[in-house]
Amino acid sequence: MSDLAKIPFILFTMILTENYVLVQFLGICPFLGVSQNLSSSLGMSGAVIFVMTLASAATWAIYTYLMVPFGLEYLSTIIFILVIAALVQLVEIAMKKFLPPLYKALGIYLPLITTNCAVLAVTLLNIDEGYGFLPAVADGFGAGVGFALALVLFCGVRKALDRARPPKAFEGLPITLVAAAFTSMAFMGFSGMAESLFG
Amino acid sequence: MKRKLDILKNGLFKENPVLILVLGCCSVLAVSVTVLGGLGMGIALTFVLVCSNVVISLLRKVIPDKVRIPCYIVIIAAFVTLVEMIVKAFLPALYESLGVFLSLIVVNCIVLGRAEMFASKNTVGDSFFDGLGMGLGYTMVITGISIVRELLGSGTLFGLRIIPEGFQIGIITQPPGGFFTFGCAMAILVAAMAKKGKKFVPPVGCGGDCAGCGAACQEKEAVK
Image 1 (cartoon, rainbow over the protein chains, first blue to last red):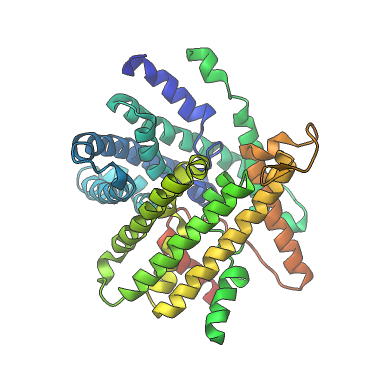
Image 2: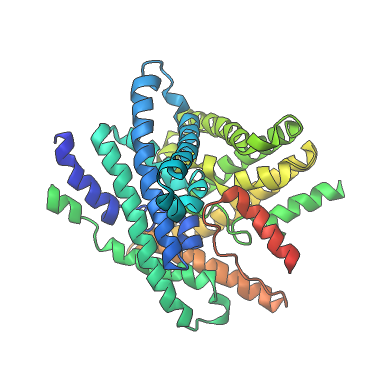
């Protein structure tokens, strides 16, 4: 399959069948932390999509053109986390200067993203999969959109949970986790679909 | 010596990083499918946590305050790379089953949180025991959850069959089972604490701001 033909398959798997939050357990902290109201979920999702796409592109280029020629592949964890940290800072500064409205919407979520495990994971997995440049960027974008989908959907689930009256011991986080289990079960329904659609 | 023991116990029970502070739950949910995987992850994290706590505590007077978080991340990442190489070389099967989560110890909230909250303010000896206590606390919980998940989900323990074939509940090993088991474990803890007359409300995530989260939690406790 050529790089371009791979993209729909990657997007589909990343958003639905291999959803980062609900199927692969990446980025659970922000998923539980900010899904209480819709506006913060949207802000966080926007920031994650943005940073994941950029980070995928940046780390792919650094890995392919700097680390491989110098034989530094074993340092990928340490280099990628630094690249992500620097990138987040740069994006924050650039956004503040050139896109103030966007900065207003996403700004407070950006610093939280450096230590978001989903962002580091997408960059490391791109290398593991041996993707080319375009699939890697699509992978980052798709993973971000999948994160956003899970977050927004779960925000709705939590709204309904607020009115529910679970057993006393389950109040708060435990029932939220059980609700997440059912949301994740819904995503299991997509498994195998990507292969039959694009295979 | 008593102080050291108290610090150790604090990590194991009173401030258990997973069940009480609810940090680093990604790896707990993902890796707890088999007991060996859970145990391996716990040991790897304990090693990184002890080493990074000691080094950060040694350097706490040298690291400038403004760039402390990047410094911590570099120190932690160095130890994670070390662990990755050791596991890849000597335990390839474990390396396969942990996958990307071994590398993700770098951004595990527990490690960064302890660096910021404890190692940067305390002596080397205390930081060592804090790392050990927190690491063992994590190992205890992840092993416990993986025992339940492997036993119910695959009917085995350490790969040995306990429940006859056909009676296992497959979904427990799937992602929904992870969320469900963790939720139940937490509810059991809340119920047990309530019986003892202590009220415990699990904090609901931190939005991913690991370093700031610990500080925020402390402030909240101080207000109470």
